[in-house]
Amino acid sequence: MWRSVFRCVSANPVHGQRNMTSQSCLAGKVAIVTASTDGIGLAAARALGLRGAHVVVSSRRQDNVDRAVATLQSQDIRVTGTTCNVGKGPDREKLVQLTLDQCGGIDILVSNAAVNPFFGNILDSTEEVWDKILDVNVKAAFLMTKLVVPHMEKRGGGSVVFISSVAGYQPMPGLGPYSVSKTALLGLTKALAPELAPSNIRVNCVAPGIIKTQFSSALWKNEDIAEEVLKQMSIKRLGEPEDIGGVVAFLCSKDASYITGETITVTGGMNCRL
Ligand SMILES: NC(=O)c1ccc[n+]([C@@H]2O[C@H](COP(=O)([O-])OP(=O)(O)OC[C@H]3O[C@@H](n4cnc5c(N)ncnc54)[C@H](OP(=O)(O)O)[C@@H]3O)[C@@H](O)[C@H]2O)c1
Image 1 (cartoon, helix red, strand yellow):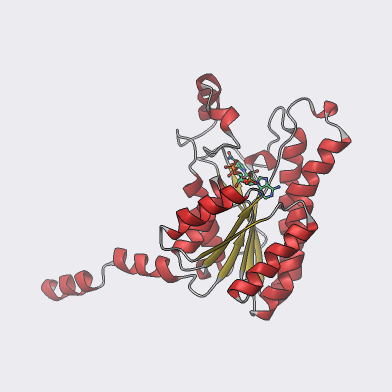
Image 2: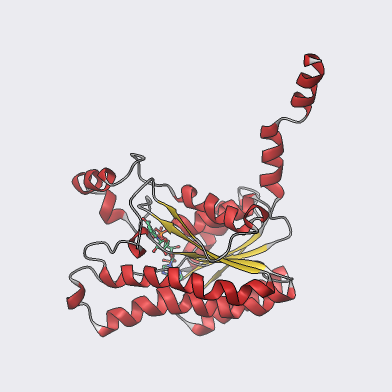
């Protein structure tokens, strides 16, 4: 009897099954990931692409787009690239139209772009700072969603994922306006989810902790600051972009088909509550 059990396990190793599922669970899907030529966006595009999605990557600079496309292609990922500054309406429309023209539809939107042009006491921040941060970090996330929803509906449903931050739960010192913009994404997730559920579109959010990218380099390039940052974590390492990419891919997969309106914190155990 044990021999036949062993034969069965070797023929269908759970690990092998998982690999097969993860490699193909998004086959046939088309995913737009904004700000996806570096860091978390690129990792999310890679995670979706490795699971079979055709990914559309973009950011402001053509040379960054070219580099990201070449990187993903070298990993056998189906990828299309274009420039898009998400703060600009015509750029957002171009991104959506190019996706429709080249991929035939849209199933997934990962809204990842954010800026932070200000560091200091919140009372010293100007109207221009607030306009820039809210335009890119919040309004563009909403307006991108509004643009893609009719196309997701044509496909019978879809998945939207916003990238917030642990700072959305606990404002970081010196990063007041940015933190507030990230809190707004938690609300946007909750506001959109019930309206889009009847269209079979799920809306979720990921709130990363400190992830080792260019964006957060001020928090980890200096050893003293990095040591202080690590004290706040249960898992004593900084996050890697891939730690976020996998969670984004999970939220876009069938495994998450009963999850909407939620934010998953991915922080190595930092305290997160509003
Ligand atoms: N890293 C962290 O610790 C951390 C923690 C919490 C949340 N987050 C969030 O994660 C997201 C990604 O951050 P990251 O750390 O991955 O940053 P990153 O590694 O510095 O990459 C930023 C990407 O965004 C693009 N980009 C910047 N402004 C853009 C715009 N207006 N329109 C389109 N693309 C733009 C950049 O390319 P171009 O220069 O070519 O435009 C680049 O591809 C952000 O929403 C951030 O708030 C990061």
